[in-house]
Amino acid sequence: MNSSQENSTAWKMMEHSSVRRLLLFVGGICIVLAGLEWVVRTHTDLLEALSDRGRMKVAMFAQHPDAQFLILGSSRLEGAVSPVLVSRALRRVVPELGEVRGFNAAFAGSSLTALTALVPRIAFSDKLRLVMIEISTAQLHMPRPQVEEPSSAGTIEERLAEAVQHVQFVKYRKAYGYLGYLPAVVFLGPRLSGWETKAKDQIASWRGREEEEARDFNGTLWGPELILPSSDAQDLDKRSETIVERLVDVARYFQNRGVDVVFIVPPLRGDVDAPEKGKLVPLLAEVARRTHSEVWNFAPQVLPDILFRDGSHLGDAGRAHYSQALAAPIARLLTAK
Image (cartoon, helix red, strand yellow):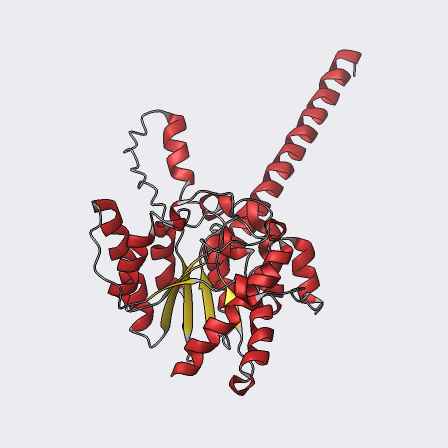
């Protein structure tokens, strides 16, 4: 065999070897993708929850069947109320109620649209007695519905993009960015009370660390502006009417299941000029009147700046004080029955 034939044979062997490696590589990728698709298809409920922060909170709340109170709202309540501290304060205020557990299902980015979509997904238990719903400029925001443009799918690329949407691990791709929350939903959920948004707080709660009580608590600073169902009827503009109607629907959803409802306006730092301190009051009065529920407006209260981390969010110290402050009105409602 001459050198040219030897070179040709060697080249063919290398070519066959390259093709074999390529086929093994492609086959391996197909196996991995098939396995990933199987995993996603068998855990669609979990991935749907991870795709949306509100549904994550609902999934975590489902692991708290003993919860007697539930908090719904935006980031202004998410980091502002610790159900554990509320429960601890309730034991001091009304020990005859025993252990009163709760869960904070508020989440950053919430809106009125998100709230109304989330409520039907909440799993009820016989223990749930009270739901506290945030009213604030952030929570009342109603984003415009996104209208999907019909896809012509004219090019190969467009047809391919449309086709892969039926692949489950592509459909739930948004969830992969929240995989860091997976331990909280799956493993830590029963040990978390909902306010813990940082990993260090989640781990501390899981390990059973005692949350720090409010220092130098002054209850006289925290008495909310109380708006009662007996409020006079108010004339509202069209947008406010829509908001009230949707809040009425949310309240009735719970009330029809034997759960009391109260609406809460979270605290604001003294230098913040916001509608909650005045312009929103007529809407609050109509919500109270039409839902037959109390509204606790904490926005006008003048509180120490040190309790806030910014104009509309309480810090760690503020959470301890606000959680203790909520115990008194909650106790009043729970003992009224």
